[in-house]
Length: 258
Image (cartoon, one colour):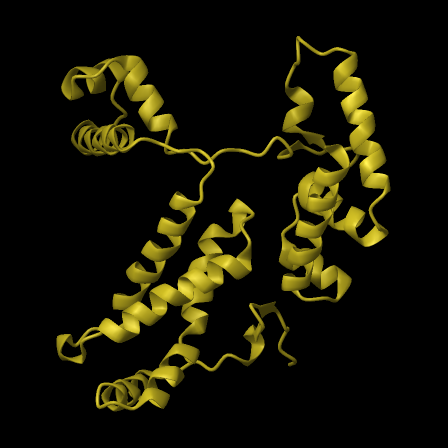
């Protein structure tokens, strides 16, 4: 059976070698004795471990090339710091490091900044909720949380909400086989006026100036909600090319709408 080619950061994922535990151990022994080629083999032989972790973030619509490179940073750190004497599988040691690197990147690049104190309150509330559920088999009331954490109901709710991922206005919320209804369709704008209509017309005109492929990519990404990899398969190009075309189209729209 032919393996399906998906290219990420110039790497054909269908050709990534997977190392056995015995091969891994032998390479670590060589690397720790100063063999730089063994280190490269360890990196290349564990790229699928990075890809398996990135599947957890597929729904976020992040640039897979960027996440892959960040995950590889975590992989290299894990390889350089792995201790064979602990007798644990490399994947057991590496996964938290790769995952931590990706989460740190997403946190630092999130457009919504959440204060440290708010996060701390949120995690204390989560811990208290878990303890209550384990003891009583049900969720605690907000009043219980606020009393035990010395915070107001509003502060508790706000803190817990801060951990939720933001939702795109173009998130599909209903489709009965006809036209898809998106989140923005359900948001009422009580201040709508002629300026809004003019702006929408300007957007439509700007989109018409893009070439057909750019229009298709934008509509599939932000109206239908497809991933760059799905579009790449449809157009028979790499995911990196889709990413570049998407960024170019958005940049063109910004210039035309200034």
